[in-house]
Length: 106
Image (cartoon, rainbow, N blue to C red):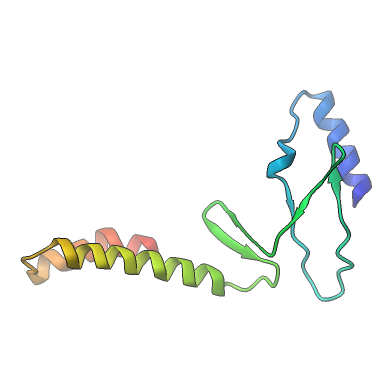
């Protein structure tokens, strides 16, 4: 794998599209993974267990539980704001608020 990283670095240097190495990370998956350390441009890449990419939480065990917790917390925060700020809680209006503000979080 390190050889692949080295080839990738050479390619990026050739095409003047270098990586921001400080933002690159390694996530080891699977039980039989040897968990080697990898480097790019002489800098060792950070190892992470969970990473957010395009708004999705990806964990090394490939389970969605972390994503569900984050999404639930966001929706609950929005619900709390609605409860605290809306004094006249007419049903139709509350349903519209829920559909437009809370449901998109999930």
